[in-house]
Image 1 (cartoon, rainbow, N blue to C red):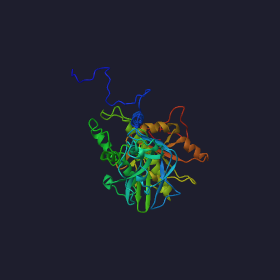
Image 2: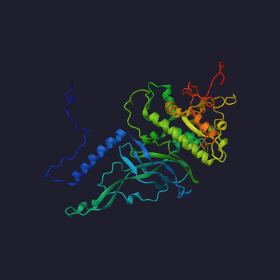
Image 3: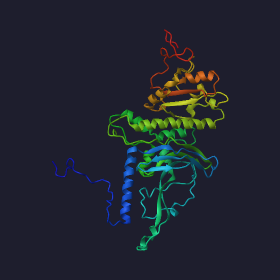
Image 4: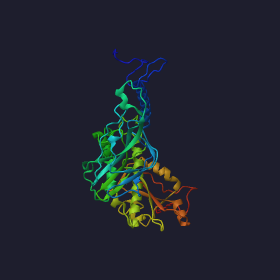
Length: 435
């Protein structure tokens, strides 16, 4: 046995948190108190690292209708809480309007160099309008506030006689090089969808399936690439993708880069495991689609004729589509999935099958374990009508009719069940296989 090996029950000091030992008669200096503050930060950071990085709640960004202008766009960010990869918590206490054109001089408000600053310096952002994609992030910031009295014994430290240090936050806008979305046509209606799935790393996910024993990279996708090059620091938490042109904002897409808290993966060294990251990404895909769909509905004069293939190459493994029902705006059942293989087959004379609305949660959970749907692959999509939703609409209740879709790899749910089926809102088969 090597003499350098650590023995059982032998204390290990390397990497330990060093807290100042206070006792009566000890002479304390500012350095001692700073060391104690550092120990507290280290304890908090370890808890933050265990919880994981991402958005805990809030921090949704959208255009500020009252302040937004084509050449000076402004976003409204809701109050919320995030944790960055350094384990730091970032709390936005109130809804805040954020101008994407920088006029604030960060140099005039920075704390003196004697103040702790774990994430300084951060790489500078790009704030020039033009055709391009930008990443909105939230990051820590520190400011000095007030002045404290001094005894004058050490005139050299007067410059650091600040009363308090405020550990706050800042919003940053980082330019994404066009090389990172090369091959995508920014003028195409599909650009937003394809850019989002480049962030999800769909190409790397497909490669994993080809060689699952060896290919399971811990990082993939556009955001991980930005972190790998240092353009995006571990102190930043991504909030939204912003597509900005000379005429103004084209879209603000949250969930292509925004994620809920994702803790460390203890199974990360195993080949092709069902990592929590993939579940978090599947949830983000669903949220990204619903936000994109809502924006399409708001922008379209005739949403009932809109076809999803014109705007999306990829669909999430689960989604919900509102249908046109005057005076409620929505999409057309047949038109929306035009050209997409689905069950039932269009033109077969079969109507969209019913499913019990109480199964929606179960269907979503099952679907989240599946890969996104590539509309160019020719794979069919399962489409359902929640029976309770249809029944309520037929009785005149003011409900929004919807259809629900899921990956074709999910099990069939449109099955009549004894003592649960309803004659007018279920699915039956005769002896010859008809429905």
